[in-house]
Length: 193
Image (cartoon, rainbow, N blue to C red; front, side, top):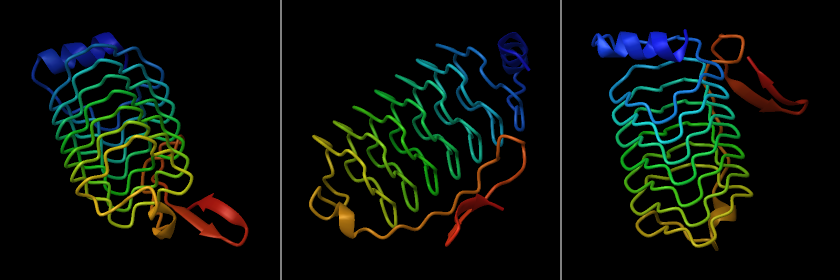
C-alpha cells in the first residue's frame, strides 16, 4: 500500500488499514485521525506532523519512524514497537502506550500527560523536557532513560528513584516478518518467540 492508496481509502471513510505494509512511506502532515493501523508495518515511515488522534496503532511496527510533532492524543498504542522512533514534540496526551517498546526512542519535549505507560519499556529513551504529569508508569522500565527537565509530577516517580523501578518487559508487537513477537530475556540474551 502506498500513501495515495491509503489516503483514497481513508477519504472513502474506510479507516480499516490493519495489517497494512507501509514501510518507509511518506505520510507527513496527513490527517489520519481515528484510522485503524493495528499490526501495520510502519517502520521507517515519515509521519511527522500527521494527525493520528484517536487512531489504533496496537501492535504496529513503528521502529525508526519519524513521528516528530505528530498528534497522537487518545491513540491506542498498546504493544506498539517504537524502537528508535523519533517522537520529539509529539502530542501523546491520554494515549495508551501500555506494554509499548520505546527502547532508544526520542521523546524530547513530548506531551505525555495522562498517558498510560504501564509495563512500557523505555530503556535508553530520551525523555528530556517531556511532560509526564499524571501519566501511569506502573512497572515501566526507565533504565538508562534521560529524564532531564522532565515533568514527573503526579507519577510517583522522581529522577532519584528511577533506578529502583523493576524491569518487566512484555513485547507483543508484530515483527518485521509480519509475525507476532514476544521477547523473552534469558541467560542466552533476548530472543523473539
